[in-house]
Length: 201
Image (cartoon, rainbow, N blue to C red):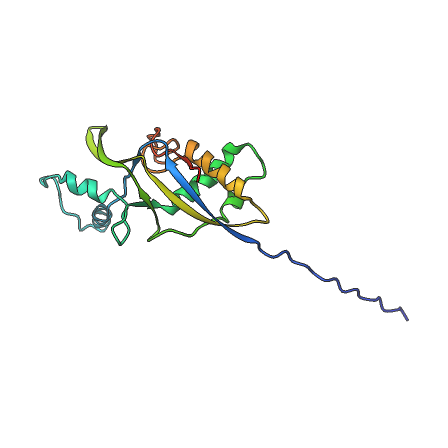
């Protein structure tokens, strides 16, 4: 009769998450252009797709309304920019850092936790309007000069450090940017607007 083999129980040890949080001040290096897609435009597209669209050929253009609706604003009236834009910038910047340790998957685990209605509040010294042409259409885009804000970021210290986050943000600010006509714009029309850097405290 075969002897029973002794079963050795191995204790499984799992490393605990080591969640850290840091406040990172950022400042704009170039003006920030905002081009939020207005709800009215979304409604018009839906109406056209569902066959209930009405012609707007004779409608007078309200440029002041266009400018106002292009700005991201919280429910309390504070100007801001989507937190997702900064996180996506950090993810995209991994390909520029030149270190195989950084990856989109790793950076996707970061959390920007101080958003208000999905926006990071910003302050600025001056706001005006940039008038430019897209084809035959004249566009009026709100422009914010000398803008700044803060990102409160949560992260796992087991996988990424404070200095790594600062590095990624600086790369994101230089190579990617935020807003319209930024260095790396998914919709095309890349420019040098919306660049930023980590500000010294």
